[in-house]
Image (cartoon, rainbow, N blue to C red):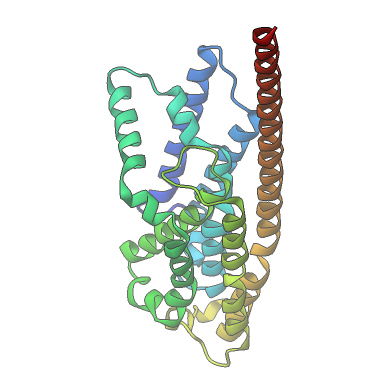
Length: 294
């Protein structure tokens, strides 16, 4: 499954390579200006691009056409693992800092800022949209027969991959992004989103493991020479849905908690500084009043 065997039209592998190249170019531009960029962000983004290119360009991609377990592994990777790695690289912040404010760069920055100010991102990143979207990406795709309807064509198969990746990005951006957003919920509301959305893939795993018949016709008849039992393979897919995301969810929750704690500490320090400044101002005003009365 790890051999390099890209599809005939490797859209996502090429997109991953292009994104990595643009990111590295942005970091080099910042360093030429004498500005530093955290190595951890660079590693996170490049690792996300590598995983994206691997899971859609290695031979596992060929197996996703026939094995439910391989398809589920790919979906979980695209929707749960790749998005936090990409967003951990803060690509939006890098774009704003590295893009020149003249020529084509001015157009790119204008388009980015225009997109941020439009109502579409505010709607797409709201939990009222992302929670139903995450539900559809698991329960709708498998229980409503979406894979059987469109997954058998190259365009439909790629569309599903893009959908899984997009759903994961829309979920994780409001939680981990440090860049500018059109709106941002409170820390408590974002923690509630994690609590609601992260376990959603667990229950579809239970359904798949308990099913006594193949639930997706596309994976009901793998090549006979492989000796694969489709029910056993479906059970493995359910086990993956149950277990794969838990370590990633734990790490994401820990990172979120650390950022929440740091933000509260900064707010407390800022409030303390404001109080000290207010006390000094009041003391100085009282001193002036005393001088006036004297």
